[in-house]
Length: 264
Image (cartoon, rainbow, N blue to C red; front, side):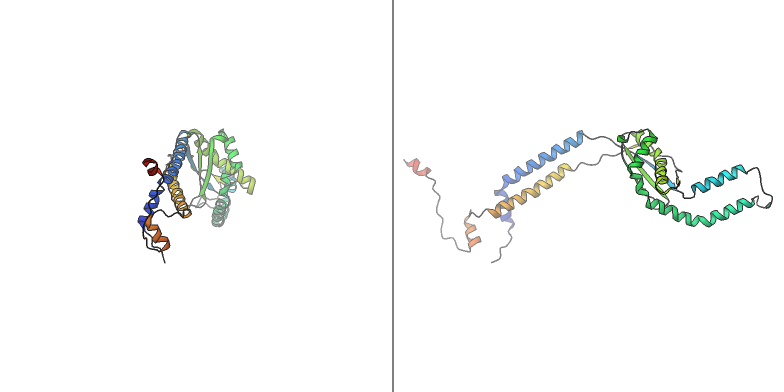
């Protein structure tokens, strides 16, 4: 015969085992309160600074072209008097236009393939050396490729002080460039934007007490159900009909002997 689920029976069960629920909840809430207090006391403010860099695989070539132009700025070729452009400049412009598309793809590939190097230990050491910020003051360095302009990388530094975060972010492009030169032998990092100031991070909400409450409730319910399953005693007249399916004929009062002692 199938047993129907009765909410009242469950409520009675929890009422009988209320001390288990109270004890477990007190223990869990006490632990959660202690953890919340220690988290509050040990909290240290942190600061975030950001910097944006650009990957340019033709950086060295462009620098060489600019140097060549500056050396020969006083010597203009008169072959093209209408445009004022020398023959050498026309050749260089044709080379730039032919390689611009492939260079853009190369920049994006470098940015996506080596963005993880920003968080490497070598870059952290380089940042600490260049910025004069102790490595212990730098809590984290992270980076993500820009979605709108894939050749750009957005870098973030979390540090214990505002100046430390700013100085580390300012040194990060150079430190990352040194690591790229070591790994792929290419000088390709440009920093068109200055590093931002160190901004105080907002304190996250501590949910330890709430988690402890939920955990205590789950554990208490589990223990109550476990004890109830293991307890096979018949406690009420209704249990006779429920478990054995037999009608109750009568009850015998329990005599613990106190009444007989009182009569004597």
